[in-house]
Image 1 (cartoon, helix red, strand yellow):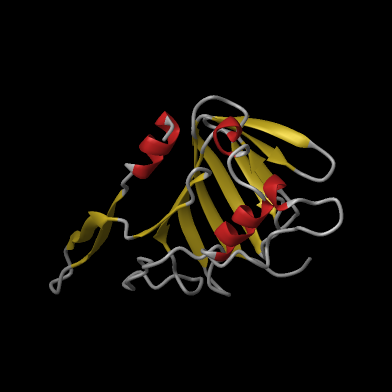
Image 2 (image 1 turned 135 degrees about the vertical axis):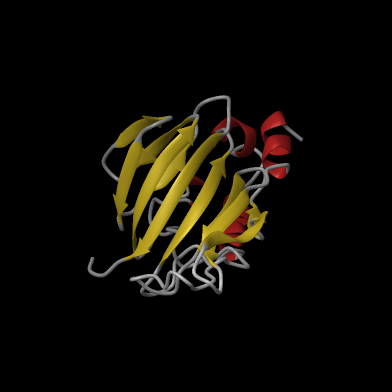
Length: 186
């Protein structure tokens, strides 16, 4: 197992949620490790942190997800941590069939593009969302049909429901904080 895979496997995110007591005082109502985690090793991992069913959000609702699902609820959003291992650590050990099966494990089977010149290994996919993708650490390329853009720690990419993929061409995992918002239109 590579150092990246070991680090990804050991990753835990503590989610602390505020609320209100019966007498109206602010307090912590949940303090636990996020339960909705999926390992996509050797490619990476996803951890869903918050998943409201609709917007506007019920400030008193309990929106902690119990499982990872690629897309948010139809009228809601999902806040997610996505860790992408360096391409060099996984592209030579998986094939198209592995990628297709991997996408199916988190509800992404229909998002992946595998027709024409697209190969599943390229990870090109489309979701019915607008995604705010913030690079916490590392670097990643946002790959579109006609261009690529290198993103580094501190950069924000707004992905507006277009065909895209992520590529980590560095030697370290890239950590992305992503908010996927359910969207309309094409």
